[in-house]
Image (cartoon, rainbow, N blue to C red; front, side):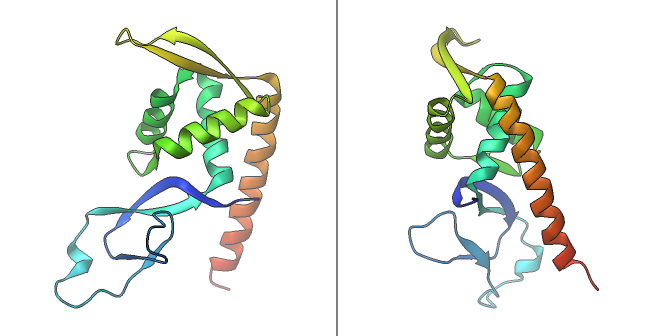
Length: 150
């Protein structure tokens, strides 16, 4: 259901890749002791879930039709820079959602007078968004029931 893809969550430096070349998979590292990593607040990214990318895109498009760059930018802005959807993952998700009939697109002009494809959510997309949000809330709730102290 949910698979790691190109959505990044900003995190404190001190993460290690699980596999070389797999930018979505990272784990906290214990550091090499060469400096005080606890005081280094530079951001790195952690892999999140494919279903999360889809629900974020659908939610963003539920506000108004947008071109791809604006979708990614709005997700970044609304999360105060903590979430960033990588270009490849964004456009793969938009095309997948369009094939499923959850979004539709048409050519338009951006505020900068550039030609771009604008995406909007369909009625089926709104229905799927409600389902995805409910599933995500259930997943997060279950996750925190395990993580909370007994």
